[in-house]
Amino acid sequence: MDRLSVLDEIFLRSHRGMGTPIVLQGLWRTAEPVHPALLWRVHRDLRTGPLGRRVVRSRVPGARPRWQPNQTAHPFTMTPEPIPRAAVLDWADRQGADLDPEAGPGWRLSAARLDDGGCLVALTCSHALADGRALTLAIDNALSGIPLAAPRAGHSDWADARHMWATVLGGTARALRRGIPARPAAPEARKVVPGTANALPGTATTCGTVLEIPARDWNRVAVAHAGTANSLFVHLIAKMLWSSGFPADTIAASLPVDTRDEPRVDNDMSMTEVAITRDDTPATLRRKARAAYEHRMTSPGGIPEEILQVMPDRWAYRLARGAGERDVLCSNIGNLPESLLALGPHSCTGVAARAIHPGLRLDALPRTRLSGYLTRIADTYTLSLIGLDPDAIPTSAALTALAETELSALGLSCTAW
Image 1: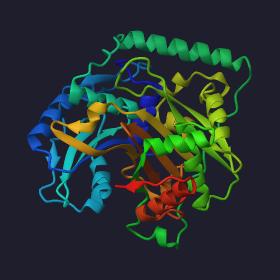
Image 2 (image 1 turned 90 degrees about the horizontal axis):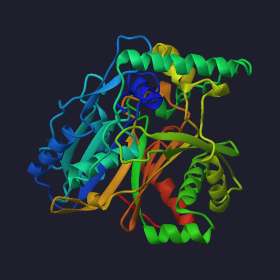
Image 3 (image 1 turned 180 degrees about the vertical axis):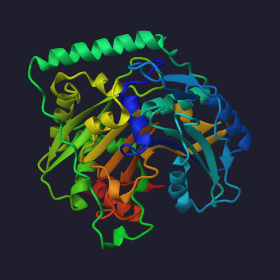
Image 4 (image 1 turned 180 degrees about the horizontal axis):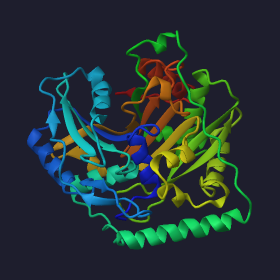
């Protein structure tokens, strides 16, 4: 679609400081150097592909912003000197700065030489441009030439405005016949307690780790617990949160659901949620998740969600603040295309996908305390974790240890990046 969706605009507002900033990232690790000329070619194909676009706002009241092709891009960069292998995620975190889906560019391709002779390549992209599945489609297109669905044709600004006002006014009138819906309760702001070690200047708001688990082992444990690969993932994230000191007996988990019916680069997903209790197992979570996928998160009282697109940004932000945020996020991105296993002649020793939060402040932490991103490629599951509770999980080392402990309790071993 050449117009922004409701979800696109939520991510665009978060990029502009109204909400939690979210940037997506794909990471490729090789055991040998990758020639910059190869990555320049990938950069060129990305620049002329579906990520090469920016937001253009309409002057017609009610018309949605539209996407405009934009081949301006951050230049491909590679570190002049090798960085320690142990610092790869710290380097990757810094690649989320200076992305702008409106003025452009909204994405960046960069690489770092590693002190063990290998290389780490990062494709970093504003969430306003694409979701996790879309990012894998974009890089698959650039690496292998796999075709993508053509953008859907759009209407003129005036036609789009008429459609939007008809949708909003008609849908709101029908909803109000059932009574005025209660305003959704916004999540309370979460702040680090003043005077604690984690409130000191320079404290990181997030920490991250990437772990690899053999697919045969992950699937074996899932089957042994009468669950699925996905319900085992949700179970693991919940157990980690409780082990970090989360006090409540119920954890609310948000689960993104891919809704695209064609290989298209956009935010084509919805959100659902499950309530996890301490007695839940991968088997019970399998049933809960299946039921949840039939009931997606919607706007309250049947009010059309498009109302967020015809009101001023700050009003829309207040109305939708915290939408989709729960105690944990469990994003199962699924199987990655095997074209991502190599960069030209260079085999990849690791492939990961995750979200990062550049610019997130300690005084504006989201409700979400722990995010997990699960992918599978060939014979490996890769689990990327982001901790958003610096009081409970202060460092990446603490996050890694927490994950290793809970995986071990399930009979699983892992390899950390």
